[in-house]
Image 1 (cartoon, rainbow, N blue to C red):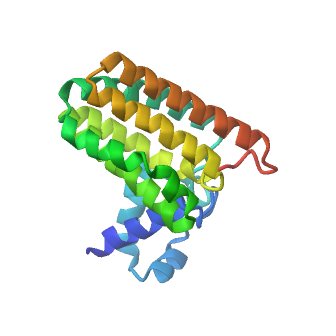
Image 2 (image 1 turned 135 degrees about the vertical axis):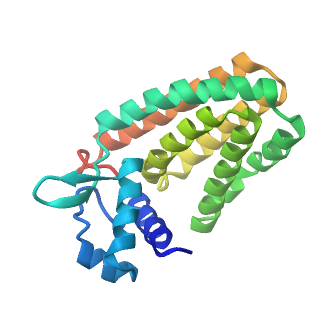
Length: 220
């Protein structure tokens, strides 16, 4: 792995997992030492993270981790609604039913994963990644897939809000299963509607969680 890829991967993980909190200054010398890379590949990694929207340049300070406010979370969900509903609709037309039948079987046991603790929850998120990949493969549309990937980068940060609530994760798994079943049936309208309901419930939960958090101005 190239040094810049290593630095990017480690910084991406730390930002998504909240190890590097929003507003954290990513000083070159400190981060180079921490990650075990020289400053040139670190700069390359920071440029990629800036393109992802995970870091930004702060005049007079340097590069900092971007904030995730309720306003920009709402904006992200507006984008997700447009992209994911269309993706579900097109997937229902273009899918290989067998692929989604396998996913349906796995999601039918998602509650067992979620109830089994941290390792199971990680496996549940991996299952969600498998679902995303199946959608991407079925779409066969590089432009739409690229747009979906860009939104998923920020979704990874937001998902941390629900990790401590197994009940919401179980509800989310049930909602995803409904989307999968509509795709299997080739029902484009139902797949899009089920996606709309899933996103609405997800955003409603996030808003309630932020409102009830003492640090509600900073949720990433």
